[in-house]
Figure 1 (cartoon, one colour):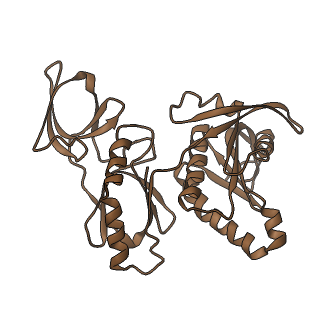
Figure 2: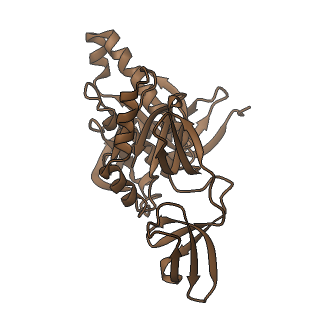
Figure 3: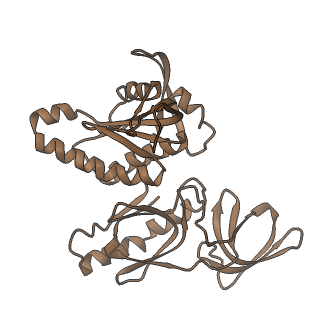
Length: 328
């Protein structure tokens, strides 16, 4: 039970639908449909990034996170998903702040942190994400997060606050399976064709050379979102994946004893049968100190290899359980 007068520092997100009030006045059902679609898109990313939706205020969501990194990455993924969905009839805007909040007995939050986040989000352009300098200064050393200063704004009841705009780019590839529609051979063949296309293979290879985001992101029909290291299609009705991560930062779920090796420390790598290092192949690695490692290698990113002492067992996922696959 949450005690009265419980206070904490938290990252706060405010997000709403642009021109929602005008749409509600003109066409109530269209406005309600927008809100339902926003809930469907936003909710999985709140959960996977460790956030908590405190409440809805009309079309606005008040969301709390323990860290600004979680809040910022969540905000970016939400905007990316709106692009992936090709939603053109409405857009959202997002404001982020880090500050003091007071947690109420019913779980609601109050305080200056909430007020400033609300003021910031009202300044954001459609499809944009703005963040206060207080929040940005805590995450500016994160290589995957970038922002441009928009200068200082005089916020009502607050005073001068520097506002920055988070920069985000579109996700690379999306395969929308949408199993709420009838499953047909044509649709499965289309999914297989996309997964095996040179564009997808090239994208996965490029992504595995970095350590910022996951290669494969699966949204399930029940709203859950999970990250995986690899994805294959059996040609019939299942996908199988390797190495589930706790989040998009490549923190491996229990069960994999992975050792990270710098390329600079490697003397030689002998791969059984092929030189494709992205396929979980058995290897014999000799380090410069002549120590030998035997395991299964995959690219970890930025000049490092991940060596698993045991081959991760594939996890089979029926297509009917998957709503969408994003390859980032």
